[in-house]
Length: 597
Image (cartoon, rainbow, N blue to C red; front, side):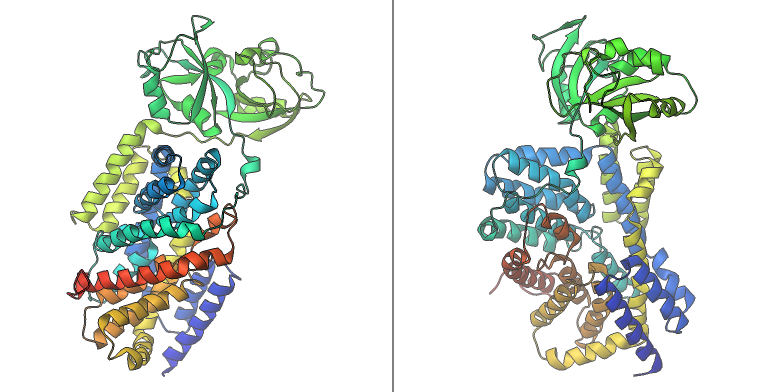
């Protein structure tokens, strides 16, 4: 060993310790590793900073923005609701619907985001039908991880593998190069989980840690705007467009509650819909050009003061002067220059009209006004406290546009009309330029830790190659596998990555092991692509423990799973996945048979 190899191995040992112990965040560890490589002379400055301008870093940042736009336009929410409706009443049908649908969702978005989005949907679905969430959450999380194998852009590991192959001039992966493997993995995992779900415990599941802070539905009234897009259109179209974001409790026309109007009845300008809606739905409905919150439409002109308008929540205090008085009598618009847009009450019945509600202690009012007015209200003894309103408007009208941009992005990358990084960067910019997602949210959607971690670990892989450490380790491995068939060597690379990824991220695992796989392939005088791809697959789809993937950690508490639950299901599944992955890689790139003979 030379000095650079010794320095690199010492830095690698320190990085592994920090990654595994989590004494520092992964992005901080990656940056410290990068600095150490430069200070010891293992890499020069240009090599060290190459990760920030690398294709994987650009694509992963763009994918986060595109995912955020799909969420902001309500696309992912509607797909999640559709999955819940299509899953039926039985456990086996739920698994049969949830797994392929979630896998498809994960193919162009980050699997942790999909798992987080589907977690409450699947939990509520199971509870509503008397099913055990623990029998559905693990199949859902597994499908989210496997869905990342359907395209090249969903998991950092595949992007890093493709980057290594291209830098080494050892091959090139396109956006759908690994799709046949991904389809095979999803196809075998569904029947496996239909059988293996009997190994899962029947536990009621625990509520999400933030559920107790969530206010489910606010009582409010919607006004159909004259000349708006909903005027003269049937209620059924509004329901289809908004999905489950609101529940209708009454329909007022010409001052009277009408019981004879239904889904087929047309909406007329001035109609009032008495509804319950979530915080996000309230913000979305207010931003819909065809609808408005009735109180704001009626009294909004009375709001004065400086600053932008906003929503704020106010809790009615004990012994407040407001208790027992109706909103109509209190006349907040005249008295405080704010409008009551909605009301949340934990217990008790509601009046038909919002204005007739007699306030009670603990009622929460959604107030709309200017910032200058809320300072006065915060000091008023009638309110216990004022809090920010947590609703975020969905830009549902732009959902078709967001889907079109996503389709154009994928087509441009798949046909190589544009290089994949440029195609996804253009897609992300288009989402912001067309206001499918605003700039602030686009920046928030980018997980900076993952971006920095990828940019920081790429130089680690470069150092492993440039110092000759990868060849050194590959030579040691070759002493064992030199005379093995290719399928056996592919399984070894998958297995090494599957074990290492239980303590490291998929990206870090791929950066460390893919150069070794590359050198093994060269020494065996075979194409490097299947060996590098199998290594990345092992880093991504090894479903062995709850700590191997962040998605597993998300479901651990809500499903009340134990460590042994993952082992019972994951060990035989991972062994099957390893065999299928190696077999398919051998067929795709080494000319092996598709079917066993």
